[in-house]
Amino acid sequence: MPRKSTRNRSAGKGTNKRASSNLKTGRDYTYDKLYQSSKTQKTNRAKRNAARKSAIKDGRVSVGSKKDVHHVKPLSKGGSNKKSNTRVISRKTNRGKKR
Image (cartoon, rainbow, N blue to C red; front, side):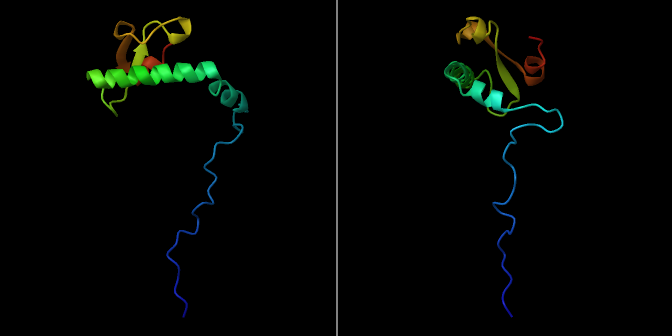
């Protein structure tokens, strides 16, 4: 009698890749992909990552603490990554702010 394989038969067959649009809302992700890959957004993202890294280094926030490093004056309005321009607040507060 042949031995039954213990290999995961569904491995590599999943559709976990992001769709090009959301069928429920009709939102198209192609614009987002182009916007986030632009040169200005890449530099802004690098600045935000650097601000978080410096806050971790200073001990103001820890990895996995569910806190965000908030820029008092946003980078899009000419803000900087100086310590005086950043503060640590909860994710809920930071992401719920009205723009």
